[in-house]
Image 1 (cartoon, rainbow, N blue to C red):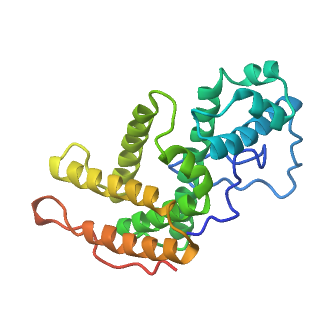
Image 2: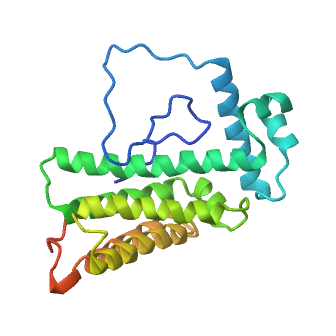
Length: 242
């Protein structure tokens, strides 16, 4: 789904990271708005998340220890439990922030395209898809935490819920019906294909390989958009994405 490198702060990099709204573009703050000074509690929370990201990335979820997270964050065990219920809660907080940043990156790209005058649902969908995939590559070290299978119990259920959320957003963007069986099947095929390509992207060895996979994926997804119930077709115009 636009290049997001540098646009989306990683968890722990900035306490002022923008909240994601999958249905709209980012709100522009007034130029004169004073910078918010993070509270001590928020600074501690962000330090814990940053440390958790590092420890989970190095050791994996199962082998990661709370004590090491606390040490790297220069915090206390009591401070950690003030913000989180434990290791699983830390992991899920990272997941929620990553998921929100993905949605925000896609929404930004679509909003920019709309602001430029684009109204074709298919073009907007492919624009959002490219931004989603490029964001996944740009944040691949974070993404690997969630794609390895070494996750807390029940995490797969959250993944399925997230997939249903994306199906809903994609239906809205394409103007498709989730109630009509043919539309529903196509939406599932599109959304699961994008998700699996995102998983594969994080295994790429370099940016050239990732870009080639992304370009090929966009072509494939564009082709899938040709098929709709009853022989109907979504708009066929191929967008210029770059």
